[in-house]
Length: 412
Ligand code: AMP
Ligand code: MG
Image 1 (tube, rainbow, N blue to C red):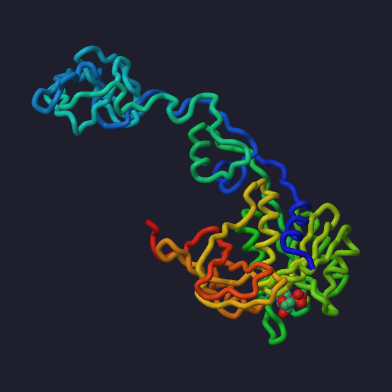
Image 2 (spheres, rainbow, N blue to C red):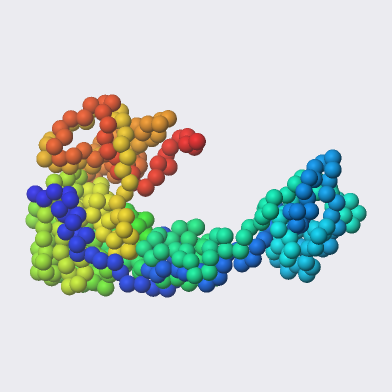
């Protein structure tokens, strides 16, 4: 039996970041940028007003107050998006809108609320400071400045920055194509007529959804019968993927042929019993150049093993540096006992209560009980050596969706 970390490291060692492709900035969301982005222009391009008000010379407002306003001549009006035509001379001001370029000669803006309009003139009711309410050209980004570094994940802020810099396309790591092969004579697809001895291949869909959640592209190869020829045919169909994931057929039953076929077809195939529950059996090898992970067939085992091994592998292929789900410490709401020597991943629901996270299990932990996965937003991780945790004890919880979106309070 090998440790979870050992299996993980072997799988991570076998995958590397994929090459680059150019995509539209909106399609780049969640992907890793493969280039340093330097600004070809200043943002903002010109000094401009941060307020609706009057552009003026601060010196002209010395000593101004509501009782003794500074009276200035209004020489023009500058809506946002227009170019000022006049220079502001002594005793003059221009009506200016937020975002409009500052006219020459002006060195401050006084907001509307601190002024009073009087025909042809404006009364300034406060003393302005030099530079007040002006956004300087390049104060966000200077020309030539590195605005986004390669290796960063494109989030909405990066999309906005790329747009501001005039970049509609950007180079990002390709999304891995992940082939999904279900195996088992008992399996049928969703829409097939159901018979009492058949079960729907839910793994085909839960695994595809997990692949999509990683930002990768699932390729549904379908269901292989527990027969050598059919497995070989399906695995060969999967070979144009960047990663192959199968479920089922890796236990010790007479019809568990996946590992046999992997041995024949691939090379460097390894079969492990990983010291974890659920998800003990795991096959791993290369089919030609393509890494291949054989997950156990039970619906929860398949998902939990995917989370531990395939999720980080896909993120690595996408160029990500941070590969792992977040974990938090939480107070356990019940007693849990286990055998030593095996790491347990227990379906659970975590919630914030004030400054504390609390966690309870979501019921029957059988590896076929998908319902307790449905109710879970995290997995309690109990280390190998632990045998007992009592209610009130602290445990580590892996968050299944990188958030705590079942939190009842807004958090502020
Ligand atoms: P196996 O690892 O092939 O022995 O499968 C273990 C259990 O998981 C069996 O009860 C299977 O019926 C079930 N199983 C295997 N593959 C799937 C699948 N694609 N979808 C849902 N359940 C499955
Ligand atoms: Mg099977």
